[in-house]
Structures are given as C-alpha cells and as structure tokens.
Image 1 (tube, rainbow, N blue to C red):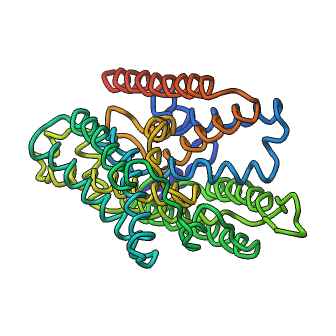
Image 2 (image 1 turned 180 degrees about the vertical axis):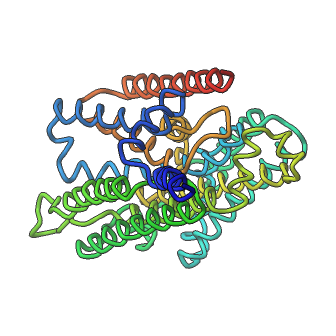
Length: 420
C-alpha cells in the first residue's frame, strides 16, 4: 500500500521538475497576462517594423543595409546597456550622451596630441568615464541630490567640457587603424562562422547546465524540448544573420571586397555576456535588483545601498565611454557634436523600449540590445523611405511613449494581481 501511495507522488514530482513544453507556454502566457511581459513588446515591435520597411523598401533587407544596422546602432546600444544599471535603481542619467562625448574627446586628444598607444588611450577614456560615474554617483548617493538634477547639470557642463577638449569646435581626425577597425572593419567570413558556432554551443551548454542544476535542487526545470526550441531558434536566426553578413556587399568587389560580420558585433556580445553574468550570477547583481525594488528594505537587510548606487553610475558612465569610443571609430573623428544631438534620447529610449522599467527593479542587459535594434531600425527605415529628422523623432518618441505606457500598465496589472 505504501508503495502504491508513493507512485503518484513520484509522478507529480517528476512532472514538476520536467514540465511539458505546452505547460511552459501556458505558464509564460499567464505571466504575460499578469503584467510580466518582459521583452515581448520589443520583439513584436521589431518584427512589425522590419516587415513594414521590407515591404515599403525592399533595399531594407539588402546585405549592405543589414550590416549598416549593426554599426549605426552600436554606440547607442552600448550606452543603453550602461543605463540599464541606473534605471534598475529607479534613477536616471541624463548626462550619458555627452559623457560619451567627453570620453571620446579624451581618446582623440591622447591619440593625436600625445601620441599614446591605442590601448592606453582607450583605458584613459574608460577611466575618465569611471571618474565621472564616481562623481555623479557620490552626489546622488552621499549628498542626496536627485539624480535628475545632478545629471542634468552634468549634461550642460559636459557640453562645455567637450568644447574645451576639442579646442572650441575643431574636428579631430582619428587615423589609428585599430580604433577605426572597431566600427569600420569586418571579421573574415570563416571567423564569423566560428563565432556563430561558439555562441550557439555556449548558449546550449548554459541552458542545459541551468536546467540540470534546477532539477538537482528539486526546482522546476525547463524541459529538453523547450531548450531545443530555444537553441534551434537562436541557431536559425543567428545563422541567417551570419550568412547575409558574409555575402559580398561592395559595389566594386574587384577593387574592394566587403564581407563578414562587423567587428563591433562580437564587442557587443562580449559586453552582453559580461554584464548579464554580473546581474544574474553575482551578489552585486542581486543587490542592484533589491535596491531598485525597495531601497529601504535593502538597507535594513544589510546591503550597502550608497555603494551600490555609486557602482551603478560608474558602470553607466564607463559604458558611455565605450560607446564614445565606438562612435569615434565609426566617424573616424571627434567633434563638439559627438555624444550630443539625439544620442541620449535614443539610449534611454532603447533601454525602456527593450523592457527595462523606469520605476526600477525590472530589466536586463539584453533589453538594451533589443531596444537599440528597434531604434536603429526606425532610424534606418525612415531614412530609406526619405523621411527627415522630424518624422524620425516623432515616430521614435511615440514608440518610447508606448513602451513606457506598456510598462506602467503592466505594473498596475501585476500589482492588482498581487493584491488578489
């Protein structure tokens, strides 16, 4: 009798540890209905935008334009990745755009005027960003000035600092081959396929190890069928992207060949892996979410809230510096407009459109990449259709407002579901 009674329990435990793919889909649908939509709006928006632009302008899907999307949105995406850390705390950094301009100017001056090696110049630019982050974070966390005010003041001050560094408006050309190659050169086709294979293999290994560990701890683990769908989807999408990027894009291939994955792509992937690991696998990452969810509760739990806030601003400004290096590489120069114009608006928009909440406590680094892709597609598609900056700003603003509205409604639905 005891043995018979134990069998149903064992079956239930097994089912809980290895649910079917249908069960996983229904659970995801329940989370969406409960307000936890994650990156779903960004993904759907990206699909709709690409479809519309592909129909309106078939050249949108051409290999050369596809490659341009990566380089056009790279700097904004990297800056947005840093902004995710600040937004997770419920704070804002309005100076990230011009902070990237300041760091790009430091890079240009040390390269041209001082003649230092490229790696020293890049370190100097990133170190400048880190110092900026320490100052901004300390004013917010230690002094208690609202981040909006601190970073707005920095937004204004950094415009003047950029002018000082570039000698009141000069254009500083960058000729270093390594720096220019970051956003201006491509990987050999064979290396692109090698990168593709490595990414798919690593993603599959991470998914399998995660499922095995959860099952070993008696937690609900994703079924192998769902993992296979995820890995297969990544393999197909990434494989198509690499195939298209490896096609000849030059109009005169006999003179200059243009093939391969842009070098900036593995740079962004490396940053994605690094910061995703930091947020999901370290105590620091858990503390970021805790402070963003409830700062006072985090403080009572023994978390050094001020230190977490300063660190988030340091990461944000350091990533702005990396974005400035990428922007300088793409333009092969630095001028007073570097990091200005719409860079900040697009970066904040990318993070929010991708799914990071403006209210803090919810977001991932990959959100910045998804949102950056949406912004890049809008800007690129509108340009191909012949629309001016006015229409691009209007459309991007509407998309950002829609994303913020979806986030607010999702929070209300999640709160009401929690009350019930």
